[in-house]
Length: 470
Ligand code: SAH
Ligand code: SF4
Ligand code: F3S
Image (cartoon, rainbow, N blue to C red; front, side, top):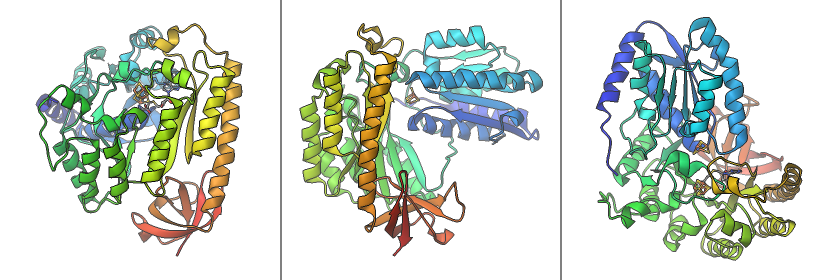
């Protein structure tokens, strides 16, 4: 957990700011991935705004366009190439600086393809070199032709970067980087490197700062949050214990004490690491939301084994039972992949069986996507596209049926809702979320924004509920 000196980078921010002074420059950032990717974009935005750029959604008026890419599934790639085609004309017309960063840039075959088919980019940078963006940009402004700043080794934990957050009520805080699990379908461990955790003190100070700024909800981010500090403990890496934090459960307990913070969420935990101390901390901490995201991936023990998930169907279900017995009002959300290589009708039926039994609050469903370099891609028994789609639709139908039954159960109940702002679709309405992450819209005065409000749910719709202040 060594901390990297970023003195050079902070100096380069000032140098670029000087070059840009008085020019009224604009930037756009396209964020294409998960919440960690979004959190990285907030850091990039912080850096870029300190260098004298202001944000715009309009690509044609941008002087700098940054793509923060994802490669977890194929459609993420298609989106990047589509957008690059679009921005080429801005590059030609006004010399817009084009920078491409994030997970996809850690894939060699993609960077090769970029050089061949989209050679007009100025900077590519990976997941381990985000903090060096000021230095890379300075070189481009000083007429260096094209920068490739990608590291194959695991990046270090960087602290002290500026950040420009997208929201004023909810904030994401990355607690660890990387993943050691190597699920056989997944590219993330290859593009994000090995697991490494931030120091407890850095995390707690960041959250205390957020509380002072008025933030109410914190989402802790990591590919495997409930193994926070595990690698460090196993390798006997010296740990600066702070406020008693030496694990994920003690981290939850410490954050729960921070005044001003009303809600704590976290994604993603791994079922195999859900130790009793974590379950008890969720039960004991009043601010920790009782919606647990518990990625299932498949309900078939055979498929789970080939996926390298390290739990069986029975273990998953008994974990759910244990949590239901320990944590009052617990609810679950999950991720499921359909059409993993070798998935039979029987395997798929096991997935449907788990979905029926757990009755998830929310299910994120994905069609298996082959990722170059993963074991899944080399498996011979790939499932035909039409079978994958048929299964996906069947799962979707089951899930939507369950959600609509659950939504009806909300009607007439009282829910504490954190009011997040005006509704995007109707500015007369406010919007917020329940503990279980359901969107609730309501009529009410603007000064409710940022407050926890007790609402009576008066009607339900597929993707939101309607509430009334009680
Ligand atoms: N570390 C997190 C998130 C990983 S990516 C976790 O373990 O839950 C988010 C989700 O994308 C995964 O949970 C999985 O359901 C899905 N996913 C990952 N790789 C995929 C692939 N090759 N094809 C389809 N879905 C995939
Ligand atoms: Fe991918 Fe598995 Fe790691 Fe999640 S735990 S990021 S699914 S390898
Ligand atoms: Fe995508 Fe990277 Fe997140 S691959 S899902 S942006 S960790």
